[in-house]
Amino acid sequence: MAVPLSLNINGEVRAVDVEPRTLLVDFLRDALGLTGTHIGCDTAQCGACTVLLDGHAVKSCNVLAVQAAGAEVTTIEGVTPADGSLHPMQAAFRDHHGLQCGFCTPGMVMSAIDLVRNNPTPNREEIREALDGNLCRCTGYHNIVTAIEAGARTMQR
Amino acid sequence: MYEFAFHRAADLDAAASLLANADDGRVIAGGQTLVAAMKLRLSAPSDLVDISGIASLAGIRVERGAVVIGAMTTHAAVAASADVIRAIPALADLAGTIGDRMVRNRGTIGGSVANNDPAADYPAAVLALGATVITTQRSITADDFFTGMYETALEPGEIITAVSFPIPRRAGYAKFPNPASRYALAGVFVADFETGVRIGITGGGGGVFRDAAFEEALTRNFSPAAIEGLSVYVESLSGDLHASAEYRAHLVGVMAKRAVTAALADR
Image 1 (cartoon, rainbow over the protein chains, first blue to last red):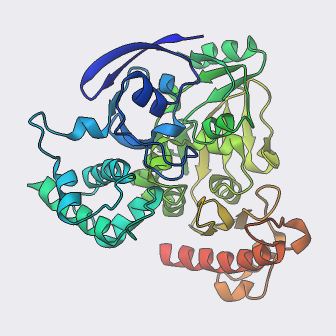
Image 2 (image 1 turned 60 degrees about the horizontal axis):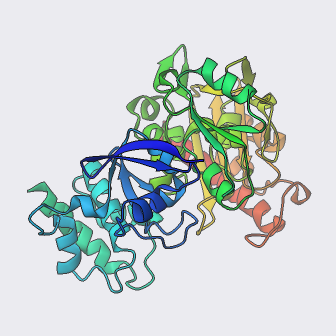
């Protein structure tokens, strides 16, 4: 049976009825049309569905939408400035070829933003460790690490 | 995932009565294990009682030679806590190796300890440090708390509110993680107290356990050399597609030495 749910998505309060068994990722994609958050594995391993929940990176396929009641959720759509340009971390992924197919990229960017907010100047080893929960099947991670190093520098400016 | 009713408990009394009125109610804290189990239909509770909004379950404090960690404290918060890093650095280290970054942002100490996964990290620290699990009804010592694979002394409706860890002279944790899941294939926590050394072994068997031979050897001489060649009974360990029992037994010995080395570097 659907229950009322209200939460703040990308700065906007949304009130929608959901079944309690609805996963946060399905709520974002199906109820709100925010399809930038991807479903890769659906078993909380790949990190493609990473969003910020009250400022902390979480896997939205492993959180019930009702658990986020009253919380602030930021998706990849929410990090892009209103003028349509890119967030510095998104720009760094493009500049440093930190993606190939791009499927994992939204989750990578959200994880990277969470990392840099907690550790403004991460070294390459710290970046690799922080990406433990984000899988990429294309790149071998090298350029992703370089992109996050560069994105971190831009975010500090 | 099967249907269920969802309730948000305002306080522990409300949580207890919601659980008492449910056919098959479960507490949900961070949900990092439970939601995944429900997706696989391994778990199908009739009701979920969300305790994340209960203020009394939050926070970390140091008092009378112990670190007391509220049940809803996330692994990330324990790993980053200046109080924990100062008092029991090995415990902060352990919390920082659980799962991955996103899991640590959401998973809680109360949930991990109540779930008692045989390969989880926290049970090793709870047992080795001789911690006390504080619940809505009583205080349970670690030696009495873990009763078997995914089984604990918790009664139906009883909720963990905090875990109190005595501060040792020194401690260390080492684990060999499964590269995919990050759960321990073998993890060893050693804690050196005035009264002797305690060891908690996870990942190897049907649940976290101690080992008298390791503890006696390390109490006599707290060094990796003192446990050179020691191992645990292969028969007490499990073998599966991730590792054979023999390999796990070998890893326990290696991780125990690394944990002692880490403890010696600690102070």
